[in-house]
Amino acid sequence: MNLKDLYINFFISKGHKQIPSAPVVPENDPSVLFNTAGMQPLIPYLMGQPHPYGTRLCDYQKCIRTNDLDVIGDTYHHTFFEMLGNWSLGDYFKKEAITWSYEFLTEVLNIPTDRLAVTVFGGNDLIPFDKEAHDLWASLGISEGHIAQTVEDNFWIAGDVGPCGSDTEMFYFRSNDPIPEVFDPEDNRWVEIWNDVFMQFEKHADGSITELPKKNVDTGMGVERAVSVLEGVNDNYLSSIWKDVIDLICKISGKEYAGNEESMRIIADHMRTAVFISADYSGIKPSNVGQGYILRRLIRRAIRHAKKLGILINGDWEQRIAELIISKYATYYQELIDNKNVVLEVLKNEKEKFNRTLEKGLREFEKVSDKDIDGVTAFHLFDTYGFPIELTIELASERGLNVDVAGFNAKFKEHQELSRTASQGQFKGGLGGNGEVETKYHTATHLLNAALKQVVGPDVHQKGSNITAERMRFDFSCDHKLSDEEKTQAENLVNEWINAGLEVKRIEMPKQDAIASGAECMFIEKYPDIVSVYVIGDGISKELCGGPHVANTSELGHFKIVKEEASSAGVRRIKAVLE
Image (cartoon, rainbow, N blue to C red; front, side):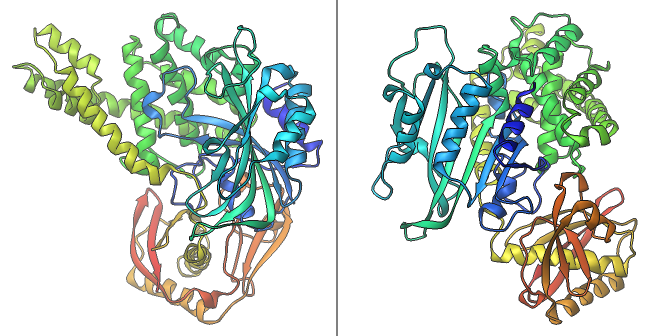
């Protein structure tokens, strides 16, 4: 049985309800481009909002992390990965979480106890050593030598303030060497496979820490790493998750995996991530900004490495790889079935566009190839035209020219540092995006959606939104530019409802009943069978939503449309503020 199924079945047997995987593109969380962890979509519930499925939850979540994009090609990094998780929302705590973790590892996955080791929080000036976690592991059979205490690696907090607590990490000894009697977390033969986080405290702005009245458990196990551990391979790409994809790349390229590992890993990884981004119901397309930029960069990097392997780029290689990936995951993710043709079209169009860009790059190379290529020029060819340094060296060599590789590397490193610095805020997960102001904007999107349905027509539907503490952005289906009159009417309607002081009610009901009642919903597939429906006033707005929302529209202030513009074909975008 698949690891995901084993995990879900186990936690269902412990009274958990399975919730569907959230989309890879998060809603109303501008702090990240993609969902980067299993807990991220659950932030409102970890902060206290009741979950329709109760207090014990489990799932497998699609995650994308791109801050390590440049190290993809090694044995264990991935841009897309799946995270298994189980949660207690103010229900059970350390005893159950640790006991069930141990039971799943040893009795379901049949891992020998002596191959397991754990870390626990060692304590600091504010929070004591986690003796409870230590004693629980010892009582289950983990030897004293296999329980290590750390401080920095065993304390979790999303930002500078907010919910926080100790965690305990589980490690597997992935080596044929004799198992050491004393566990050293720095010994890379020990591989982390699971993490239980105990949200027990709240850190305040003055640095003080107090106990939370309602304690949560958040756990996570990476599917790719766990499978490679269980199958006894030291290269994730040799596990059953990747083996058929790598075999197909070998077949298409006519080359062996040995000696071509880096390029084949990059193609496999980037193609899988590109498939999931372009299949997402948010409709991301390759572009030069945001998620679209990441999608474009992934596809183009895969193409560059396909060229490196000698694959005929104008062939259907990307379609074959994408179709295999879709077939592997379609059982678990409906969007891959619904949007298969979209995925294949995105990949084909971007490939053709990139080929034209490379041709421009060749013409640009001709202009600068009358002398040795300096580092700045080599980097310009890479950054603007997608020329890998290897291609520049090869072309220069044919003309008897040298390339300043050290200069290129210096520029490339500078580019990496800038990218990493810029992405620290945008790619980090956390408890951002749910403050008081953002909550007001979230409710305002519901009012705007309802207003547009009245002013423009009932066929208007939300296609996406982005909220910060400064403004809201709302995308909606519409085949024309709004007239000044339409914008004024929509704005006036929203303000009329705000001034009326309408109650915002949250009602739980079966998903099908919600749809039958006329509740509006974007991406119906992502919602569980029991949903939260937010109703404003006497049915002015009725939408399926995860929240958060204000209790009354009078809290919103004055609504003002700042800009209305095209977003994409058949989709318009409104930017608005609350004053």
